[in-house]
Length: 93
Image 1 (cartoon, rainbow, N blue to C red):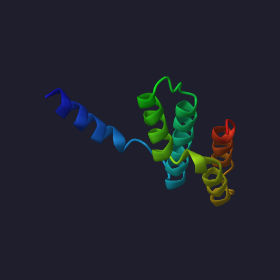
Image 2 (cartoon, rainbow, N blue to C red):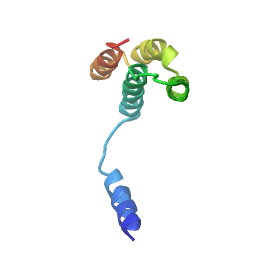
Image 3 (tube, rainbow, N blue to C red):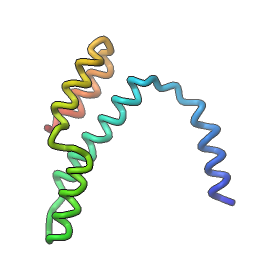
């Protein structure tokens, strides 16, 4: 029952957000960059942990984060706020 209430509330609130496609793409990129930074800073204290870290870095395509960010900036050059957010996300790379 609790899950049903949460699902209905989430569906109702989802209509309240007014994000554009650009905001959504930039938000996904920023979140990806944050996760890449997180996993890159994790300690590989054993083989299993190293495999977990490497798997996440691969899944997130962290080796291409800078190139992907620069491409996204080019496509958003007319949106200064988006470019600023992308630059901030790339600051750690």
